[in-house]
Length: 261
Image 1: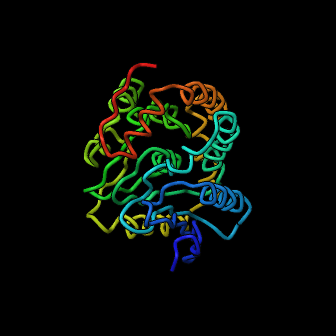
Image 2: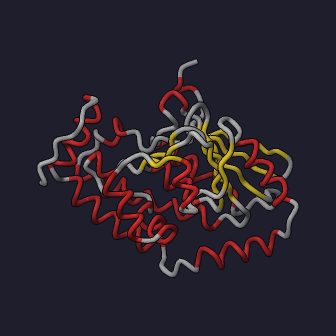
C-alpha cells in the first residue's frame, strides 16, 4: 500500500496504557506536517482522557524518529518559515499529559526526534541505538526545545559539545549521562517500556500527575519562552548560505562545506 494512504500516527489502547506509534517507517518516521498535526491532536486528547493511565511513544520500523523531513521544509519560502516554526510550540504538550509518558527508542533518534524523546518522562533505548543532534551539520539551529532540554538534563557544557559536534551519540554514552534511563537488548525497547507503563498504570494517577508537574517545573524556565527564542534564532539562520549548503550536502550525500555566512 502507498505510504501516503497510511495514517502518520497510530494509537492503540492496551489495558490502561495508550500506545502511540509514529508511522512513517519508509522515511525513518521523519516529521512531516500531517504527522506533527496528528500527534498534537493526540496529545491534546490525552489531557482529557481519564481512561489513560500511562503512555508509550514509539516508532514503526527500524527507527524511533530520524528528525524532520528536510525535503518538505526545504520548499518553504523564508516568509513562511517563521509561521511554520511557531507550530513547534506543541512539543510542550508532552509535559501537560497528566500521566507518565515513556519513549521506547530503537535505531536512530535524531533532530526533532530527540525533542520527542526528551519530552517524555522516561526513556528506554536499545543498546545499539543512537541519538543524533544533527542540526548544525545541516547548517541549522536546534529546534523543538532540544537545546533547552539538553542543557537542563545533562548540563550546558555537555549539551553544547553534543550540539556543536552534531555527532552520533551511542546508547551507552546517553545512559552514562542519565539522558536515557534504561538500556535493553535490540528489538525489546517497546516490550520493556510497556512493562513499565503497565506497572505505572496501576499507580496513584493524581500523585503521578503532581510528581510530573514538580519535576518539570524544577527546570525553572518556561519551555514556551525558550521556543520563542528558538523561532527568532532559526529564522535568522534560515536565511544564511550555510543553511542552504547544509541541506544541499544532505541531498547530495556529501560533507557540507560551510563558509560561515
